[in-house]
Image (cartoon, rainbow, N blue to C red; front, top):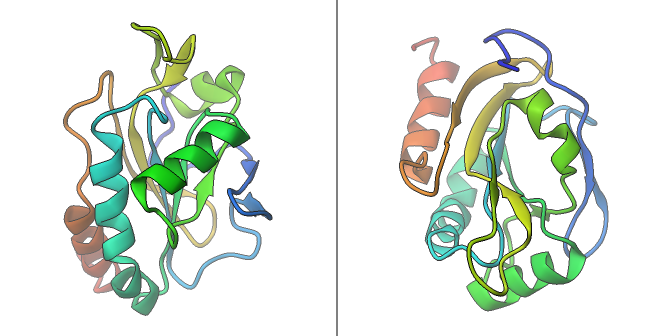
Length: 164
């Protein structure tokens, strides 16, 4: 399924590493919610991407944007990712149900080596406006060509100024 720009997104409520629940648009952010879907603990490229978003959190916060990392990993794997990758400020949501991937237009891949999960979502990025509608998205079929934290920050700045 493809979600069109301006359309409402499917409901999303997931547990967070360290406790609590992330629910999309409850309460709504001042400007945007940025969902950074990552492959999981087994991914070699994910630590760098999440670390870059974490490093820019003060700038996102200043713009009223919240950033959430999301994976289909279970609680133990998500907590291990946070620990091993030194992600201590970027919220990490886990247990994203693979059955919901089609509703979000996400690609699912099979694990390729021992230690990989049997199936997991490929990277994706969603900028969600404060009304819960899709502003923009980048959905990957594999581990490369991800949205960078700097590009996401530029996007939020541009949109808040009324640009493209």
